[in-house]
Structure formats: C-alpha cells, structure tokens
Length: 298
Image 1 (cartoon, one colour):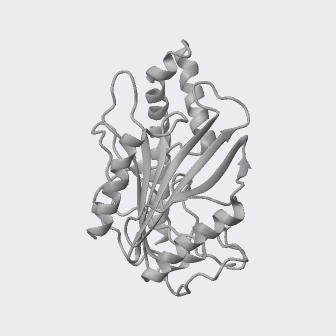
Image 2 (spheres, helix red, strand yellow):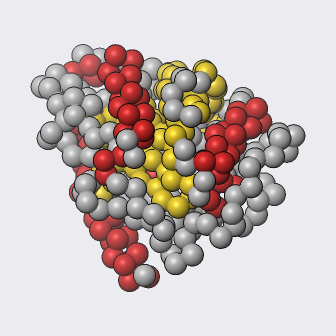
C-alpha cells in the first residue's frame, strides 16, 4: 500500500506542476479584470495570489470517472478537542471506532455518478485527493467547511468512503472563464453517523461563528437555513474578508455551501466562484439541485 501511495503522491505533484501554470493563463484571459488593469502579466499574478489567499486554488490530478480518489480521512486520535463540537453542545450519535480504513484504504467506493460533473468540456474536472487515515491533500482540505481554525470531526471515524471533484461551470468564452465549485460525497457507517457530521457543523457554528484570520484573510461561516432537501440539510455561507483590498476582487464576498444528508450519505457542494467573486445563484442553484438528485439515486 505504501508503494501505491508513493506513486500517487508523485502523480499528484506532477499534476500540480503542470496545472498551476494553466490556471494562471486562464486567469490572464479574464475580461473583467482586463478592464481594470491593462498589464496582462500583472493580472495573472494578482489572480493567482488572490485565489491562493482565499484558499481555493485547485491543486489536484485530472478527473478519471472510473478511478476513486486517493483514500483520505481524518481519524481523530484525540476526540476531546474536535474542531466542530462545542463542549456545551448535546452529544452527537456514537460513531463506531472500528470504521474508517482498517486496511489503509476506505472500505467503500463512491461511484462517479454520485458527483455533479462540470459543464466545461475543454476544462476537465479534477479529482480531490482524500486520503484515508491521513490528513487530506491541500486541495481536498478546501473542499469541505472549515468552520473552526483547528481541530477535526469525531464523525470522521465513521467514514466508509469519500470522493470529490473540483469542476467548472459552462464552457469558457473568449471574454471570461467560468466559475467553479467543489463537490464531495461521503458515506458513513449509518444514517446516525452521517447526521452526526451535520450536528458537528451546527456546534462549530455556535462555537466559532465569529470566524478566524489566516494569512491576511478572515473566514467566517454562518447558517442560512436548511433547504428541506433530503433527510437533513444545511445551507451555510462563508464570508471571506481581506485585510487589504485586492485588485480585481471584492474585499468581502459570500460563498454558499450546501450540505445535504440522504440516509448514510452526505453531499457537500462548495462554491469557489472566480477571482474572489461567488458564482451567480442562477448558475449555482442547478448544481445544488443535481447534487441532491444524484444522492437520492444512489
């Protein structure tokens, strides 16, 4: 298993080296930012710096519909201090300690059909590198709500399988590049364990609702409401605020995050937007709807 993981790490590193320049070139073609600044080279640098500051620059390998992402997970060895569980909150449903990855890999494979593929044919989806029993890769760590700055979810010990992608909306046009999003589907040992994840998010919002600063940027999550979708749902908003204005991007922006549970599965759609701006609802809402439909079809 160590040889396989080492091989994957080499592939992921190579993918990073090859895809980051492409992302910078795409940002250079953004008409919106071109109108704000004439220097094309500066535009590319500012765009990449802006995306990295928000923590939403994709760093992943190309998507293969028949390949499960590298196993990941956050098996908590110290459940006394989970990220998303406030001490005063009511206890979450018990999670079997033997779940997760006893053999070094997730015991369940999430099918590709569970994910909402992007609509940009020339811009392939990217597999998120979730690794069972170890911290997720940098790209995958950005795909799920991080309500508190540190800690982990106790419910992670109940994960049987997890798969995610970074995808683009609509085919790119000469005057713009499409917005993008993360979509992750996780299967837990039981509906109660899946529900525990949502309970931990609620507890984290109560505990860390004021947000936290990281590298000159402040991140703060809030609960909008449930959507009524599936067996249980949460609609969150991530507010990203820069300490200093970033040219070509809003100093403050709100990004929606949809969390839906159906049985023992949980779907998370996380808006990435483009160049610091969120995706328009008319473009993102269909992704939320399709994500629920795919979850119900599993």
